[in-house]
Amino acid sequence: MRNLPAPNPSLVAVSVAVAPPDSYLAGRDVAATTAPSERLRQRLSWERTAAGISDLWGAPSTQYYRRREMELISRAFGPLAGKRVLKLDLWNEAFNTRIGHWLEEQGAELFAFDLSKTVTARARQESARIRRQSAGAPRLACADIREFPFADRSFDFVYTMGTIEHIAEYRQALGEILRVLREGGRAIVGVPHRWDPFLRPLLVGLLAHFGKYPYAPEKSFGSRELRRDLEGAGFEVLERTGILALPGFVRLLDLFCHTRGIPLDPLWAALIAPFGFCERRFRAARRLGYLMAMVAQRPAGG
Image (tube, rainbow, N blue to C red):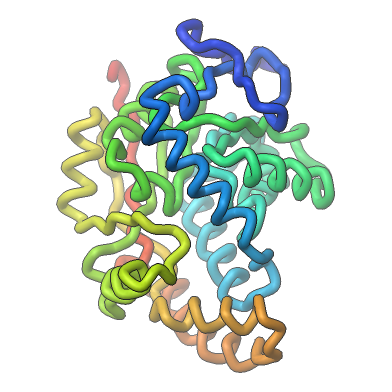
């Protein structure tokens, strides 16, 4: 087996109980040691959100989300067996699509981290519960996406979907993604699409205004803006695509019914099916997804 990614020597050991003691996950508890007032506030906000969230796994729109993630990753990264993959945030592994577990099943060596101790602990529990044949147990830690607890050129691939838009320093996170990728390594960077034809950013803004959107703050991006930021960080952008080309309110209503035990799964599955067909068959449909994604590469010699 290849050597594990070395920790960044400028970082000290993670100080949270849910993080494993292995040296390859060593890193500082950024939220507690850098700009403590704001980053600690952010961490506590995510802890409160995580404490009140229900598991979304069984909802038809969650299964749709998972299938679109699998298709995107397969197209962009190719075979995953023996590859080191870093995933930003553990929300999906704790409550949603469990895409990290699928990455493991494909033979990837999975590393992932999240700002929230609650989410990290839940993701580790879920991994232990459902993990089957894989390349080995995932390495999950509690850390901040502004400063990754890994050495330069540690990973073949990085996957982030719906994460960097929650911090003002998202460009710093893009720089960290580039730093930990090997030359020629690829990243999928997914963010909310500002020009979603079904106006999801407007819906999110209204919900946030009335305190009903638990994931605020959330920035949306246009394609030119995200491309500029990726290229500014040093990436070569290979493709602009996306996932979830369906009205955002369908997803929200499905989750509302699912978490409250309202038995309307067949209805939501039927409503979602035509969007899934279009997304599978037509590249243009994927570009209309309310999560815009870009596939980017660290250039050779970069």
